[in-house]
Length: 283
Ligand code: HEM
Ligand SMILES: N[C@@H](CC(=O)c1ccccc1NC=O)C(=O)O
Image 1 (spheres, protein in one colour):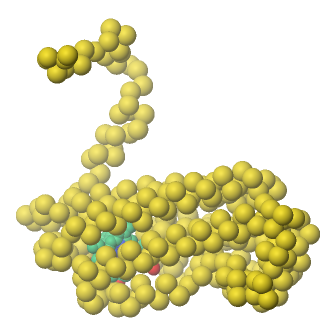
Image 2 (image 1 turned 135 degrees about the horizontal axis):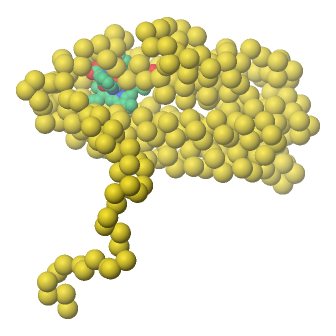
Image 3 (image 1 turned 180 degrees about the horizontal axis):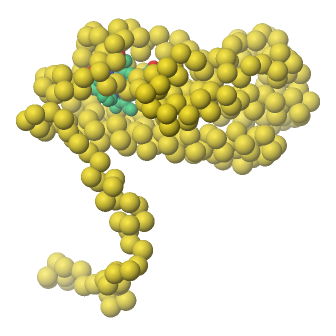
């Protein structure tokens, strides 16, 4: 059929692109594709993968922040349906981020050890976008700001996030406007503090779970938030497991104990009452 095994270009295809917007110019590919700078000498083959894995994750983190900020604003404007649309996308992005660990898992401890020394004290712990996502979801920690003291733009980004209500704060304010008994101590809380479990909130959540058809959109929203937290924990878990298989129990380049430090993040929760209510359902 196609004996030459070559596709003819159609006459309408634009090939003279001078002075026009192009794929590369629109996407700033000259910058994006020249931003990989291996530091190992001689250059280690696997360092490129290490860089690309982090850079792609940072791009997705940027998109997560974009969606989470928008979800929060939509909730503040009482537009729960649109906010849930944003969260649906967040969940899909988290799936990709978690799946992506399997690529880095092809990096053996032997290979990584050959360029780890070149990384100095750099560490994912210093990811400002990761920290901003954690803040947006309620895991606020003022001490984390000190890590960015050397970088005014990052410090400004994270400080702004630290001062904003979390996604859960906005959801609970919305629920209160819908007439649910959200305690005022939550509505008036200092949003720069980590979100802490408030037992007095559980009855409001229980009301939603006991009568789904009455509160269908809120019910759906609660389950979406639980999905989001689950997904976040899956990402943390895959990170932990990748770290364990790559550096074992070595201390981290960022100065932490390594696996033990990452393990303790798995005990954190963004939406505690959404889990507590599960113990009470059907009682
Ligand atoms: C072989 C690959 C990796 C190893 C061995 C590793 C190791 C570690 C270690 C030991 C820590 C604790 C902080 C420290 O003392 O350095 C850490 C934190 C962190 N890493 Fe990685 N990591 C790897 C890949 C990645 C990738 C691909 C990302 C994606 C951006 C990432 C993001 C993070 C983040 C966000 C933290 C802070 C976690 C928290 O505060 O709970 N890491 N990593
Ligand atoms: N903390 C890692 C180093 C590391 O993974 C890393 C180094 C530079 C930039 C990002 C990194 N990723 C996650 O921590 C280690 O201790 O080997």
